[in-house]
Length: 346
Image (cartoon, rainbow, N blue to C red; front, side):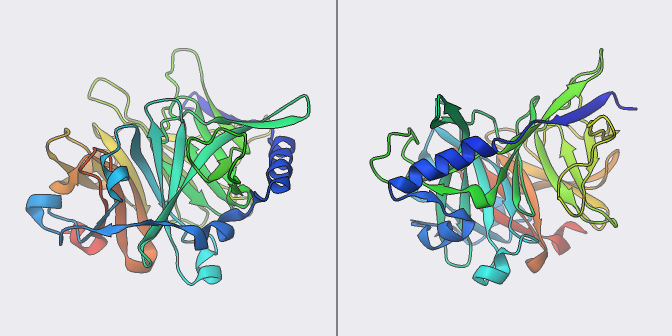
């Protein structure tokens, strides 16, 4: 036994419904991801043609944000996921990427929905809903958001030592102009519905949810969690079984969700993806050096050096184009970029 487990909190259903009703009275309210898609107002920019001296040896495509997002020292990109396997393609004719950011000030964390085909994106603030004396409110979700997973109806957001929080994309809400809710300039919010809190036995450090992904290689999906750490820290890789129907981690009779754990992760891992049983992981090296890609199995990785741009973060596999997508964090060196899987087999 690993000595680690998760417990799920109660849902914030009443708080979310009260917030939706209050916003609807002012012309906003619950719109879901379908309501956001036509309103992606920011433009994604094509950047330099991929060149190893600029973006790393394995990059095949790269985009960047509008100038204010590219240069912003308040908000820092971290996680990335895709809507593949969620049904969005059937409704809108394409899948999209989502990235997460954390704020160094009081604004908490947010996601950006990126329509790569249209070259558009929009920001959504992540919030915790409140209900005090019948009055709904929101508080910014203050987590690092180092990884995100969009699985079924849920968006899961990594919260480091706290575990992870879960939002339903159908709860995404429009905040009308003039609202008395503080959204730090964001026109849309996504409330947390519940959390999975991390616990550990005495003498065992809590699992750090630095980044995660869904492994669909086997019969049933699994949530694969990785820890960012230096050579003196734990660098565990944990697998949590997921229910194919609910899309949520499977608990035991006590409600505890227990993982399988491997402690052979590499230093400074930033993101992971698993395809056909093979692990792929990004590694950062410094704010001034290209990153690496690891390919193989924990304890037996092959390193592709100088594979990524400076500051690589989370990683996701996009099956439609057989490529991995990642995001970089440093101001003025911020890209959303792709690497073909074929180029990482050699």
